Length: 379
Image 1: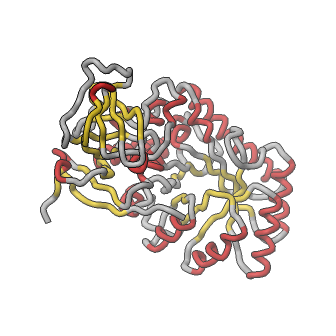
Image 2: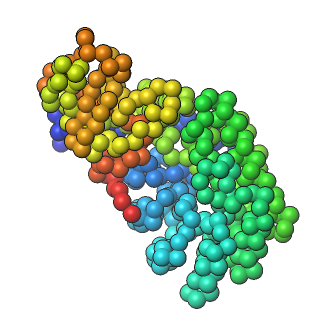
Image 3: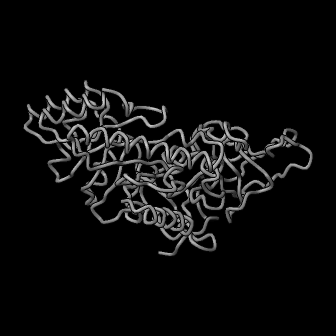
């Protein structure tokens, strides 16, 4: 079958620049090798076996997922070493056991004595073994046990006493997304490392082996200066990057591998607007760059080669309509592309943008679409 070209695609369409993606993957691989840790990629961003095969250490994994549907999908493609990195709830354990029955080693996380008791009760009733990590809070961002709290030892000792060996600890420095400089990201990476290692040392001092010390976010993974005491790193959005990552100086705009192809469908010239057929259903409502020094609206507008176009952004987004205008708000001299012209919109946040689509159009050289890769969404 003859390959398509960008100009032939019905829009909106999700584009994946393969060369940029491969460069991003190699950058993370080099960093993991330099730091001397194993890499457990998070696949919640890409949700595609074609992408994930490029970032796993082996066809069996390891990977990190954020939904059990992700675990189902990747297990169906032969992945058996999976970490489910959301605290476990009792109504998900039947699903967990079905995955175990398929030969998946599905590691669970928890951060409360209530969850530990629930898991132990289910393990005893079902005569099951569960692999468990305790989540710690290294930055006050989200969930997790304080690494200095008594709760950490209480949870671990209860699990061990119930016949569920604690495999280790896990943390995610989500506050790295709020850092204002790369120096701050480096400091956050060290804070994340130190908290995780400290928690592991406390467990070991209490006689709990704690073989796994797992950390990770894309910013801290890429800017960590050393990871002594850590065994594995997790990261996901690095595969594609996005405008939030560029705003943190974690990447450049021309590293971003994901974009949405859109078409000009009209104008409001007296307002300086060009109307596109890609609104928030095509891009998401994510405004993550609004908190950064450069607000990119609902996305940065680029030409078909992926180069930013005359400082244009999407200043507004309705369900199916995007409003393209100059970021300064100028009307006089604003660029109005003709109806039918195409642009590429670089997203603020790759995860929710990709979630709107069932497949990637893989972009090669010269505007050529070289493949269509399936992806999935939902829970």
